[in-house]
Amino acid sequence: MDTSLLIEALKTIFMPTNFLLVLAGMTLGVFFGALPGISSSMGIVLMIPFTYYMGIIPSIVLLVALYAGSAYGGSITAILFNTPGTAESVATTFDGYPMAQQGKAGKALGLAMSGSAIGGIFSVLVMLLLAPLLSKIALKIQSAEYFALTLLGIACISSVGSKNLSKALVTGLLGIIIAMVGMDPMTGVSRLTFGQINFLNGIEYIPIMIGSFAMAEVFKQVINRKSEEKTMDMGDSVSMESIKLKDLLVYKVTIIKSAIIGTAVGILPGTGGSIASIVSYGEAARSSKDKARFGNGAEEGVLAPETANNAAGGGAMIPTLVLGIPGSPTTAIILAALVLQGLQPGPQLMTEQPLLLYCIFFSMLIASTVVFLSGRYAVKAFAAVLKLPYGIIAPMIVMFSIIGAYARSNDMFQIWVMLTFGVFGYFMKKYQFSAASLILGIVLGNMMEESFRRQLLISNGSYMSFLQRPIAVAIFIAVAFVLFFPIVAGMMEKKKATAAAQNL
Image 1 (tube, rainbow, N blue to C red):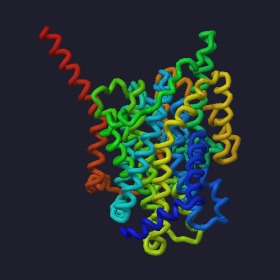
Image 2: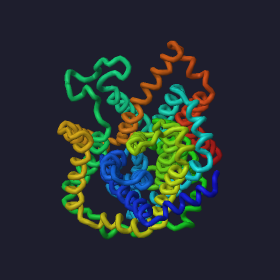
Image 3: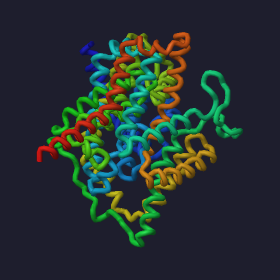
Image 4: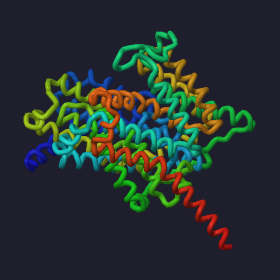
């Protein structure tokens, strides 16, 4: 590592113009991430035209800081309104929203912001130290490993996304079926379209996610309030208490594990933070001494997914910059922005533009550090939203939901999809089915199917090829452990309870 280049990169980033661009990008990222459906990828697309007349370093610094900030933004609405701004924030709703309902919105947001910052800082440090080595490892990951990884994500969400395992599995399977709607990715044959042209390109997960979480929650709140014939505003019970450093140290093991999981998953091209957040949440729940708290406002349940999905964001930059292979949909757009600036991402970028690489690293590091330091004040402002009467909050959620569903593809059909799944999501909540399992099934379904079929194609139809790759086998073992550990643990607890009763 060239010390002189590090110093030069720091000087470049701390130039007033570049530093202000980092702060502006981070702020815009939080804003875009918090709006349901208006994700970091769309935010970056909207900002690219403004970068045409900037220099290479200022434009890339702005986009990368926006990317870093958006990873936290999705948790804001996930915690306050049970409405994940992005798929990466789905797991945050499990415990973040229950904490908000208990009047601990400030603390939940503080945990999310702290976890996001730590995860981002950890992944940037890994980028600085180990990027070339990790990129070589990422190249060795093939279809069998990707299939195993998606299976692990489904296993985790099935285990922790609902209090009823069978219901979580049913909704997860339904999500996988929905992911299969449209043109077959390998043969081009239409399937499950029922003759509808609108289904040929598949069903977007964004309007389904918005409907299943945001609109379903609005329907639930409105119906509950009407049936109880009274208002249930949370204004008097909302706590502005934020998180303190000593509170984080209690969960240092969870934070470290989640940061490692997030960075490792993010490095794999095409995976993104949704798998990382779910796997991290599942591991936090599995290793907790008090598993019953998860789903009911466990603080680790907010820290783990937020640390992981932000670490995954940094991890995804490694193959993007070093190999020229996008690690996530958002980094694919950043890759395009680099090309528009006349750069060619890949191994030669490290030798031809080393200063740019260090500037990217430091801009992400500064953005994450600013999130951590300013979080105490921002959390209070966000939590104060819950002091508004629900009669004001509900129309705002509906408005942003409609905008988020439409803006993705400028298609009215997506609004109808969103409303349909809003009604469907309401009944899922009512009968305790897992909306999170549905969304993760859709998000992971395409990747699961394509990697499974591609591996069979590569191996001439040999199913044993999945078991001939050590990394894939290790992940399959983890899948079995995640699925059967709760069952075995439950049987052992019953056995202990029976033995204790007999001794009495």
